[in-house]
Every structure is written in structure tokens, then in C-alpha cells.
Amino acid sequence: MPSGRDFAADAARALMLLTRLPLGWAGANAPISARAVWAFPVVGVLVGGFGGGFFWLAAVLGLPPWLSGAWALAGMLAITGALHEDGLADTADALGAEASPERRLAILRDSRIGTYGALALSLALLVRLGALVAIGRPGAVMVALVVAGALGRAAMIGVPLLLAPARAEGLGAALGRPSLAVAIAGAGLAMLLAFALLSPRRALAALLASGLALLAVSAFASRRLGGYTGDIHGAVEQVAECAVLSLLASR
Image (cartoon, rainbow, N blue to C red):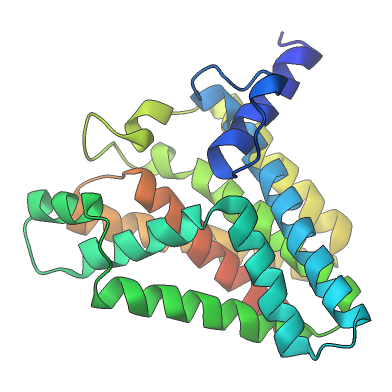
């Protein structure tokens, strides 16, 4: 059975992978492995809480909700290095192209952003900003960002369970397929958080929204790419986060 130190090291490795926090001192120098993906929702909680803190501070300073929301997104982009946004843009460019799977994989490697990527990135930012403005109250925004961050990153855990790697190298293949126990642990953490912070009806709806986002992106990647890469993980996270925030912004 893993020790408390193992769990702490897994969490540190997940943070090192999904954020720009310098946590090498905390035991995160070892290569990331599928065992650590249970901690992805924990990263989502921290990133969402960071963004919620920015929103609260901006609101205290008297900024309107749209500007507070913009600062919240800026804070989250800074702490993650826009990792998932980059994956979404690359995925949109690749999957939107009328080309062979091999050509789409080449597009995924291209650091330049195309029309589909720019549109997807703009829409993702607009949807999240609109949701934060609609939610409005700093406390409710904090809850929404924490829940959406956790569920979005929990959805990432399901990608290698549904798809095979599209190529033998790259971050997606290196991460590997988590065991069922690890996947259940990560999904369970996100589920418990949702039910702890939301009403049962809203929690169920948020879980359904994130699950549908995972299935939709995975199905599209399977049909257009034949599998997944690390960028597909980012696209799943972004679509799931947008879906959950939109749901929580509804009346």
C-alpha cells in the first residue's frame, strides 16, 4: 500500500506536470506516471481556488464582474502556463483539418496556431468569462471554479481508458494508462468535491456535463485521429470546464 510520502510525491508530480509551480524539491523530479493521475482533480482545486482568489480580490477593489473575471482567468493562465488552452488550440487545428490522420498528427506538433485553434481558444475564454460574469458573487465564483477545475481534470483521466495512444512517443503515451483503481480514486475525489460544494441536483448535472465532454472529444479524436495525444487531454479539460461553468451559471 502506498505511504503518505508516496501520495505527496504523486500530488507534487501532478502539480509539476499541470502547472508551472517549481516543486522539484517536493519529490516531483521522477518522471510522471499513470499512478499520479488520481491527483489531477487536486490540481484543479488549487488552480480554481487561485482564480477564485483573483476574482475575490478584484471585486474587493471595486472592479466590475467582467473585469474581475478577466483577472481570474489571467491568474489561472499564469499558474498553468496555458497548458490546456494550448492543447485545445492544437486539437482544434488538427481535428478540424481535412487531412489524413498522419497529417493531423503533424499539425498537432506544429506550434503555430491556425483558424480553428484561434476560434476554439477565443470561444473557450469567452464562455468561461461569460459564466463568471453571470455567476457574479465572489463566493459562488470560487465554488464554480474549484468544481469546474476538479471535474475538468478528472475528465482527463478517462482519455487513456477510452482511447489508445495515436503515436508511440509524446507526453500522452509516456503518461500511460492508469489502473482502474487509480482512475476511480481520481474520479471519486472530484465527485465528492462536487457533492460537498453543490446541491445534489447541480452536482449530478455537473458530473454529467464533464462526462459528456470527455465522451464527445474522445469520440471525435478517435474518428479523426485514431487515438489520443497529450493535446487531447488538454482539449478534454477545456471543454469539460466550459461545460461545467456554463451549467453553474444557469439559473
